[in-house]
View 1 (tube, rainbow, N blue to C red):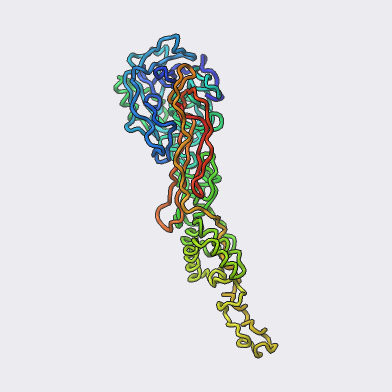
View 2: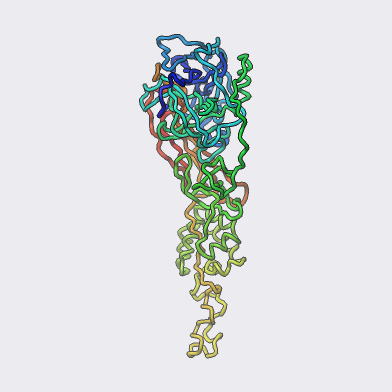
Length: 543
């Protein structure tokens, strides 16, 4: 526990116990019946990956995380603030393990251990559960566990607690790559706290189980919602011959998800599951944003990492009349161009041109973007935008003497005096409109889309900063754990002119919160493609 206090009388949480995993490490658990312990799945199963890589859909980004279970009898239960499994006997051992099917821990890093005998309530009292609704965003919690209190691998083995830790987000959230059955908090748990409880500060009812997270001091920590696994818990309680001790509070009124453009603190509050600069948004393809918003390549922040050129719905401010018309009359081709890595820079380049040679130079620089660029031009020139975007429609900027002017400019044809004779119209002027202007508005050739070179397929590297499998015994020994999250993630492919909004495929891969004798390592940001999202975090997995 980072920033906590030793959990001893008064106010000690004696129902929180330590699990010795066959002298291979330790985890934390909670007594929810005299003979039943609630903990994390990675504490009781053989870990085959060094991290838990997940996306918000609950899919693993790095394959199966665990294999079969440990022998239940090898799991020993110890109680008290400072237990020693070297000098004292356990109060009970495991008899049977309960968890969800499969080997993917995303949304499912929760397990229960039926004990071979009951533990006296005077030694480890039964703890209450909240099974009728989830932890709430902003709710204050208490976290308890036997994990590390510093970067020292030998700082675990004593029970600590930290109170008034606020919940940051609950449920699907792309800002934190959070799954439906998870919630996230800031500085709190660390290695060795895996499986331990998150308690409501006011009632001390269990809201969640410690799963994994980021750097203990600076990262985010992830927890599994117990209410989302009420059926599993009830199944284990029935086999234990017990009933849940419930919190007894009524759930709060449901909160409607906010629309794109509404203020937000995190993506779980938004219908689009992403909050950008305090405003609800969503990942997009061309033409998928609601009215008043455009799909534009934008630098975003996910899990405290910056990712450029990611297409999201934003309240875009056009920079000139052509831009205004473009995103009004030709929104889909304009957005398709704007989020394409070749078309976007061509459009931005051509906009600055004042000569045909300049325009041809832009085409030479970005030839792969010409096809999409011409789709924008064709739309604009067949709509009311042809005047605002005159230069683009003529493929030559105003005033170059082209044939698009309203007067042929043949010298004298439009004037009262012969060509070149000093009449009221200068020779070759061609009337009131300058020759080749292409309309009354001498707009530039390239339009005004300021979009950068947003990658058309900023695919991410769904992966991880995997942890290590520890092996040392003792209070600082290795154990299954989850308190450092890692992983790389992707962002949606952009540039499709139609179809459903793209969703990023990424991971919040993680490591556990059990103790490890391995020294921490650092994960470095990595990039794939033009807008790959690096979500590498620090600290190895517990096992």
